[in-house]
Amino acid sequence: MDLIISLVVGGIAGAIALFVVHRRLPSEPLEWVGAILVGIIGGWLGSILFGLLGLQDVNLVGSIVVAFVGAALILLMLQRMAPRGQDRR
Image 1 (cartoon, helix red, strand yellow):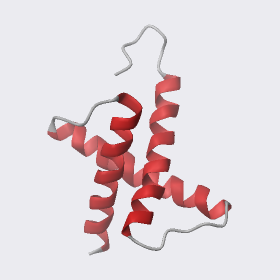
Image 2: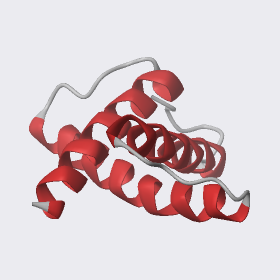
Image 3: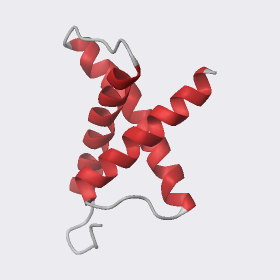
Image 4: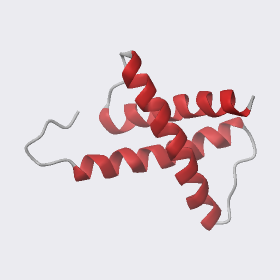
């Protein structure tokens, strides 16, 4: 059951982060897989960062917020690392 919850939270957070950073939602299945992976990794990163601040998520909405913050940071770092001449979607 935890795996399903992680996938749902990761998918929601990854899609929201993708929309906020790149102004578009995933439209193809592979983009959804990428959004879910970024959301799950973002949840891990966000929980570390929030833990350093002494904060923790206590419910589903808190988990989505933490995962969103981490996913958005990951997407922003990837955007900064992209070569200048390349298309930044």
